Image 1 (spheres, helix red, strand yellow):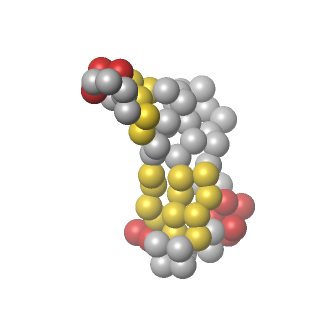
Image 2 (cartoon, rainbow, N blue to C red):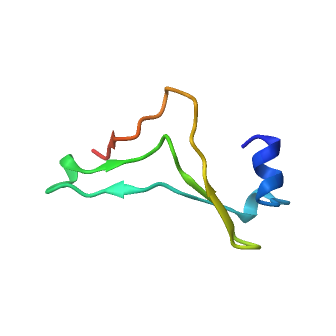
Length: 66
C-alpha cells in the first residue's frame, strides 16, 4: 500500500488491515477464480475500506483457485 492509500484509510498499524479477495464460484472448484488484481482493503479500526486496483501484471482478475 502506498502512503496515499494508507492516509486515505487512516491506517495506523498493519494489524488493523483486512484484505479481502472476491471469489467467483464456478460449477466446481476447478472453475472458480479469485480476483487478486483488485483486493478490497479495510481498516478494521474505523471501518473504512476501498478497492485497490494493482498495476502489477503479476496478479490476475481471474486467478484459478486450484
